[in-house]
Image (tube, rainbow, N blue to C red; front, side):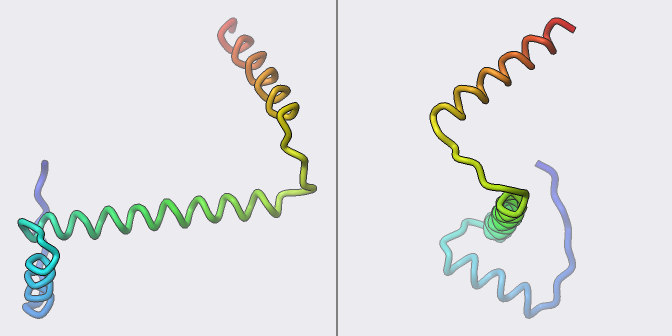
Amino acid sequence: MRSLNISLPESMRSFIEEQTRRGGYGTASEYLRTLIREAQKRQAEDRLETLLLEGLDSGKPIDVTPGYWRAKKERLGRALRRKKKS
């Protein structure tokens, strides 16, 4: 794992140290990694929400039935077979 050095004012450093103790983290690095993972998760969730909303606004709704999925799988299977041949 690579390290990253950052400069913080004393008030932020104290805050991180306090949160590390309160949260049961072994080190400030563990605490900060948790914050970064949570930010990454939020970003991924925001992206998913955007894609879902775009999908809802993308045109006329269709019924997604077992028959729809069968036809979709068949089309994808044919496309995959064509791609493997080329």
